[in-house]
Each structure stands twice: as C-alpha cells, then as structure tokens.
Image (cartoon, rainbow, N blue to C red; front, side):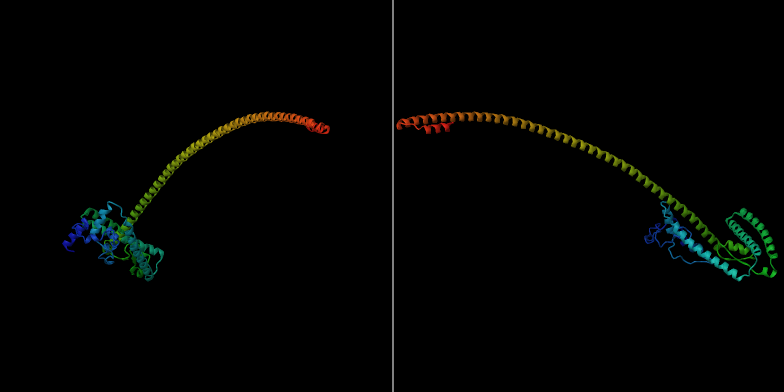
Length: 372
C-alpha cells in the first residue's frame, strides 16, 4: 500500500465517510446489512488471518474503515448491539476450526502406533513444556522489539528453567520407550490454530509457531470471542433488567391507575347513591304531598257529599212538608167540593120532589149509602 493510500485509510478511520463530502460513500450506511459487523468491531477473521497459511480471502460483506469510524462515533450516543452479530460470526468460525482440530487428532491416532497411557502422559508433558518454551520465546521477542529489554531478559531466564524441565521429561520419555519407537516423530495438534507440532521440534521452530501471525491471530479471535460473549451477556442482562423495571413500572402504574380508578368508581358510586337517596327522598316527598293532596281532596269530597246530603235532606223535607200541605189542601178542597155537590144534589132533589110531588126514598137511601 502506498503512502497516499495509507494516509487516506488513516483519515477514513479517524473522520468517517463524511470527511471530504463524498456523497457516493455516504450512500451505504454502517447499519446496512451488507456491511460486515465483525469488521466494524475489528475482529473479522478475514482481516486477522490475511497473509497466513489459513488466509480466507476477501470477506463477502463490505469492509470500510470509514464505516468503522462512523460506527464508533454513533456507538457513543446509543447502543447499537452489533456485538451479537459479530459473536455469531466468530462462533461459527471457531466451531469450524475446532472441527478441523478434532479431525486432525483422529487422523493422527489412526496413523501413529498406539502407546500405553503412562508413555502417553510423559509425551504429553514434553509437549506442554515445548509449548511453554515457544510462548515464552515469542513473548521475549515481542518485548525486545518494543524496547523493553529488562523484561525480555527475565523471560529468557524463565525459558532456561523450562528447558531444564524439558530435558528431564524427555529423559523419562526416552527411558519408557524403546530406541526405535523414540526415534519416530510424534506429532500433536495445536489446540488454538489446529497446526501440527512435533515432539522433537527445536526452540526456534516452537518460537516461530507460537509467535507467528497464524497462532496469534487465532488467539486474538478467541479472546475477542470471549470478550464479545461477556459483553453480550452483560447487555442482555441489562436489557432484561430494564425490561423488568419497565414492566414493574407499568404494573405499578396500572395498580395506581386501578386504585385511582377504584377511588373514582367509589366516588361515582357514592355520588350515584347520594343522587338515588335524593331522588328517593324527593319521590317520597312528592308521594307524601300527593297523598296529603289526595287526602285533602277526599276530605273536601266527603265534606261536599255531607253538605249535599244535608241540603238534599232539607229539600226533601221541605218537599215532603209541601206535599203534605198540598195533599191536605187537596183533600180539604175535595171535601168542600163533595159538600158542595151534596148541597147541589140535595137542592136538586128538593126541586125535583117539589115538581113530581113525591119522593123517592129508595134513591135517597142509595145516595146516602154511596156517600158513606
């Protein structure tokens, strides 16, 4: 990469896609699904293992340092939770690496002759000491390159101690096996990067392996995966706590709302009861008034009926008295008319007797009997 390209990449990493107003670069946002979330978190295996024996080539998703800068700026304001996508990506990659390691172990077990458990334990001890020597040498070289000479010298002194232990372990392993079998190269699969390690590898070979880019890249990927798991667990726990707190707040609000609602219902009920009482009182008052009015009307009607019956009786009595007086007058008039008739008849009879010269005693008797 040229110096100009390096400067451009550095500016992109520091300022993001909007550093020079290029709108074409701003069309793709870091939240796009086409952008590699592992690259935004600086843990994509395609970047880490580039140029090694296990180079994976270019990633299928977009890698851009400017988008990483945009993500870092935006992540300070809000939680985007891209760690989950990156964790899934690294877990799938590490699972594939572990599967290859298991296959390599099975292949070695099939090709190498079987040994007893005691000899296998001694060989395992030699392998562990070789790994310790290789790791210490790689660390000493790194410290020396950084300029920390004193620490590098201390680590080299520890390397000498581990080498002495390795010689003792090799002597025990050699004495437990025949010379022909001991000369056979015993291989072992590295648990980190699935590379083959020999039992009789020298220190330089071990240092190159444990300090190499492939082994350190796998260590970085595994450490990043552990860190992402912790971060995701913490964020999920925080989200669960926030969710529980919001749920409790909602329940508390609902309870307070129910209490206030129950209070309002109680108030409404008390008001309705009061209105019903007032209504019942007014209705009973109206009923009492109507009853008193009906009683007054009944009394008035009775009084009127009594006064009417009294007046009718008075009128009836006056009519009776008038009828009696009238009947007595009629009777007296009839008697007077009878007496008058009698007088007239008697006078007529006298005239007739005087005319005829004789009387009719029989007729006179009949008249008298009729009158009686």
